[in-house]
Length: 240
Image (cartoon, rainbow, N blue to C red; front, side, top):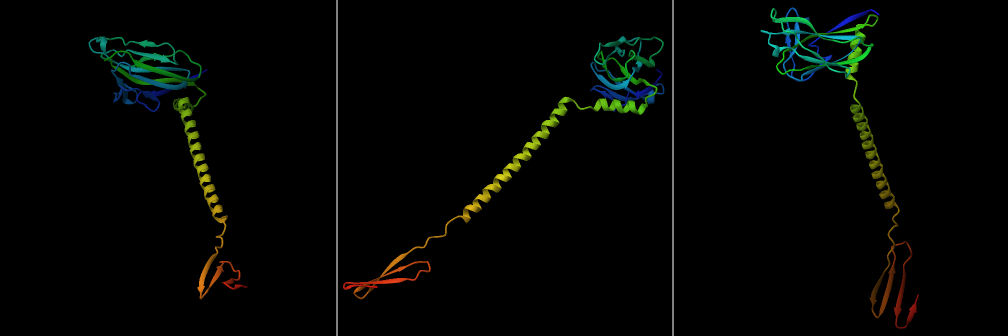
């Protein structure tokens, strides 16, 4: 199967994820797009997720006076496998060498892969120029870029779980507020019914004794519309 290449600039941080310790500097005419990624920090890493059938990492060598301490010693782990170590070979004839292959993968089945590059030595001058991915010839390059970005942005299981729990908490809060509102309405309705069921005030009767000369008159009054009756008591008898 024929294939074609996709070149990713080393300073393309939207596709390559860099840890702390890296800097992105202008390159020269010998480096791709005149840019380069640089670190001298031991343990500094970059991670690249891609869809393809192979990958290569190209960098620049900067060696002065055969100073082995400044060699860009790096290791590469593909898809969680064993690390592959790269050591730059010093050259007495040239201080700078460009477009050097730092890593080359074996043939891969087409699909999603991940490469992690790590700076091995403290003070070693690592210059990453660009990466090259081989893809099937019948696959559009835009599809490769889209799939690579999708693989990088796929949410983790923890992020999905947090989203589900957050949604459940929101639903429970809304349900609690609804039940509280219904409970308050029920209390208000019960109070209104109780006020309507209260019996009217009972009529009260009062007796008034009026002294009329030698007789006492007892007058019984009612607040209801019952005709009043008067009784006169005297020592001689009772008269209706």
